[in-house]
Length: 121
Length: 335
Image (cartoon, rainbow over all chains, first blue to last red; front, side):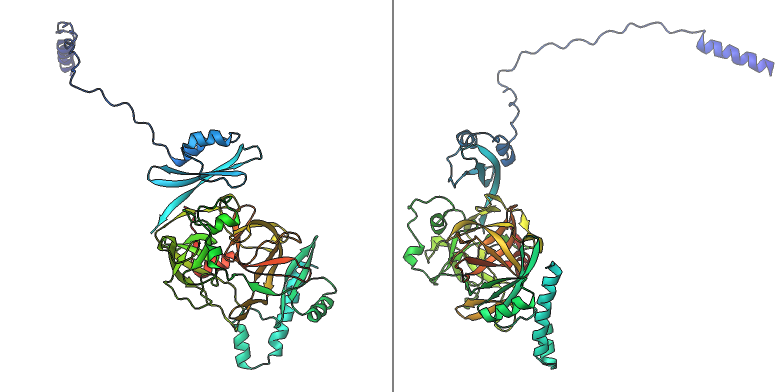
């Protein structure tokens, strides 16, 4: 048993201590040559803006805004003007909406909303 | 008087009618199959003055009204009134003014002119008939089919017009004005109390604003039942004759309301009464078919009749909206 342990120790030393590998310096990878921009390749398109939804359109109309300011945001002529109210017909995407605001006596937006205009088939 | 007491008195009067009809099997079966009967010239409901509920008495017979008033120890709200369905017969030239005529939006004149988008309040006409009424609301069934809701007497179910007849806005047979075809309705009975006077026109080839109501000036929120707690609260409507009007609920749970039609006098139960007060009529002939809203944008009734009491005050009558929508199998088309 003692003889076996001594042999094992020698073996361990032969593997772990007796032989050491030479240090090989690590070279950085070669830098690829910088290619000049290809004038025939178009630059990527800029990010596409999020398409406007009726909710985002409505969000840009603020309570306290004048009816004229709201008209600029909606971007179309006023469809009609019931008393203390203004309405616009707006196409957003494939949908048509009736956007409406309630106005106080001085023409300032107090509430806002929209309804879907649907083609009935 | 407590609310329960007013209801109990109504039930007592109804039971007296059933008892007076005898004990035959036929009579028992008849009344077991109908809404509660009322005496032939008497309608009873519930109204409220201050915190006290009253028995609402609506009749053309002052002597009978006095009998009822005494039976409830004076705790009655009596109106001597004759009620008629509200479709005016009109001159077609008046009904279809030139589209170029200027009009304030949602005014009666505007509602009677051709508008590119259908919405509640606009004038409608069954092609070939010389009367008009009001489109109450755009509704839809479970399949998503869209309809215009109005009264049966506006879309002429009462007059016998079958399904499939063109309906126009604002008036006449011009193909460009046709909005759809008459569809289902609830038949009215001359024998038993009715609950609703309603009919649909199936829409086709037209554009409609879904959900918007010009009286509320916003989007409708839904349909809800009218409760006794709603007595004396504000209501709104938009109709082709009187435009946008504000009124109050003056009576609910009216049973035995007798309403004059061209075809005869019919009885209605579970009706709602509204008034714009002594100086303002809540509705007039031609407003039939308008929906009546609470101030929060919920539909509570379908306008169908009206009349003036002895003092000259106009009263408007409506079917309960929940009953109308259930009977026709539709809901509001909100989007």
